[in-house]
Image (cartoon, rainbow, N blue to C red):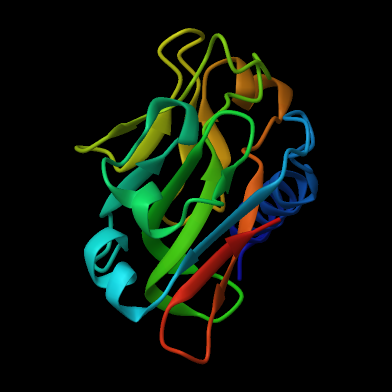
Length: 171
């Protein structure tokens, strides 16, 4: 390997290490209780099954319609819950349910900065501050906007597969 190639490889590795060491802060959104249970039948109706499919659960806005008839005790965090099917780094599986709080970590306020989902890019975004987040493969890490500049990730919730064939979302 020539000296120039060695230098290029060294610089590339240094850049990868520097980016990999930057930690994202997912504690900007206050911890509010989250608990949603989906038995197998309810998961068939309200679950996410294919990569990029998403649903928004927000008790105060009654989203999605009819869900709270099945789980009247559901708790949906500060801004609501974004449930999306994506890649789970812990298991290495695609089409796995992932869950995030809908409150933008820049705003950290239910009354402004609730996230929406971009169907084309499969990212969550804040219409207020224009931050964007990788929710299908990046575990809620920021990709653009003030959240990316500050390193503010989305608050992530656990999705636990139940023995009955459904799922539970909790913190």
